Image 1: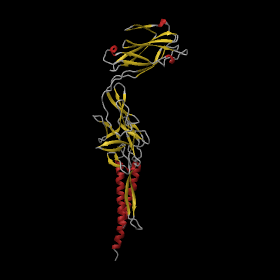
Image 2: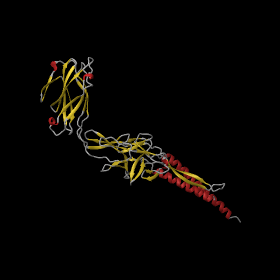
Image 3: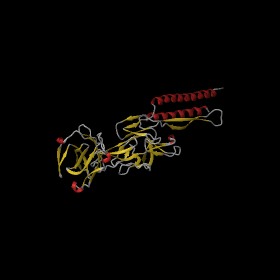
Image 4: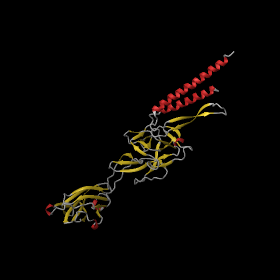
Length: 400
């Protein structure tokens, strides 16, 4: 019996060394999760056991360290969860976020598994809540958007007099002004339209504003101020500067811009514009993508605009240790792991995504080397047991 017990111990030690060797071999594998061999003793209705056996190999899904790479398609998970991939028409899960973009716009890892997530509509709104699908990034040019809303922040100098008047010439004739503010608006074709607002002080607390678009008059409005220099919003209606398609004469549609003057002031200080916002832009070519912490994939364009094209989905399990290793840093779901819980990064118990970083292997090299020494001693001890049993048996054979 002693031989079989020692032999089971040798087999157990060899199995443990296999697990430790695999851990050490993958100490530099991105997203790798270390394993440990678990053993159980063997009894057969006897007072003395029959040795040991390996009962299971348990995976450790503890987080590895996040290491910065500076590459925007390298993704690391800060917290729990897995990326969801499609590989050979099978859904697999991985913590390895080293991605690259294919010529046809798919994000995939080195093994060809394509990342999955929630698609976005043409307006850039992510359609969350549905079934995740393989994400594909389009490279079509972003169309132009006509300017519809303009917001100006400025001060108009209350000290000006008629002696400070200047004069501009529009198609309708001369326009006197004390101060002017310029910005670029865009028509429906994305053509830039130089826009100038001329301000003339008409009364102590009243200014006339004339808007010129492309050298053509697009409207005028009167601005009223309180005695404390603040804009009198009670007397102001939304002002819309307009040019017809015929006025533009370039194939674009009518241009209608609502200009907000509510942040204007009239103080005894130099007239100046301190902020200007407008929502139009010209068309733009696709230049690349960036990925936000919530997994939203943003397409970036040459006109400095960005638009969401999808959101990476993440999955978690009630019992991650029940996942079945598939190789290539991937796992598949089993009955032991339970059903996947899918959601957006940063929601529920799912971690957030760190772009420009990867998750290193969670193998603890110092611990593995110490465990290897302990396993080696166990192997030597079991070998000594066999040697001792052999000597006892030899002594019994030599009896006369």
